Length: 372
Ligand code: MG
Image (tube, rainbow, N blue to C red; front, side, top):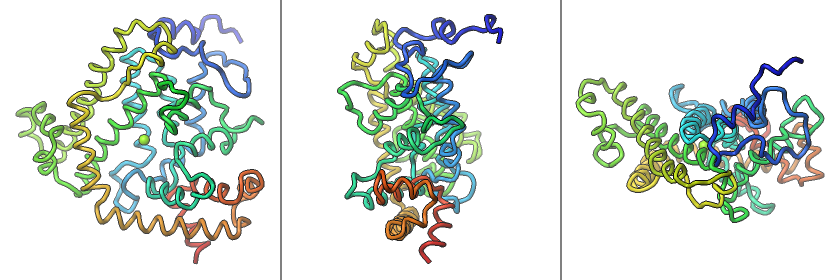
């Protein structure tokens, strides 16, 4: 195919990216060597592989904080992921980092979440305690390297070393005694900015808390009102909630760009390796970090530990343990490919991997069928 008129990924990145960004041409590549694509760079291909994976689509049926029976307004694990990707790209672009890598890491970051969010994770961790426990971050790697199938005979998604390593850094932040790539740090920061903002939004909309309470108790919300000024008085309650949440995101992104961004841009780093060894962390800093801590403690006490959510959590955990026990006793009730995994990975791990891949709804159906 005639392609000389197309700008190469290398040309594009050399024009746009900072020297400390992870340039595609410096990628360590993939475990199974593949031919380079004509016009899509390696991280762009990774992003597309994640986007087209069934595990990614299933995020739409996995809860973030609130289950589906609370209506349709609140975030699912999928919309959370999309919001993280959007905020991470904003930060990544402003810092002249590799946006394709940022987006690939962001779309991938929660792909290993089991049904029922952290409640599901804790239950599986208990079930699997004799064989190493369960972590959604580690399970994300199992999905990418073993469970997902593409049209090629290569196992898993065959993602680049950089995306897999970025996910590994979520399992163990101190792995190899090196900081993650700046792109991975951006995704981590964006994840926390995103859930602090949308959990606040959902909690108000679903009437777990009121905006008035948040304003009285939290410095961060008071800053948002100061920023909105007299405009706040003219807004109805829905518009005011949206304006506050919007400002909450802006505040945090601005802080990351102004504080960490300044250090990064003044660093003089000439490569992504120098940046990793440079010791700067991209995250909210200073008084904003304290204000975030205050907001997160509030959300923990008043929302995540709310009696309604605790009841959902208890029910989900009991059901996960039920289904786990039934399937460990009789693994033949699982689909063939998970039965086959029992010989290699053991019955417990294979059952855990099967359950972890389920959406909330599919899990409930399986529980009703297998545990009745
Ligand atoms: Mg997340």
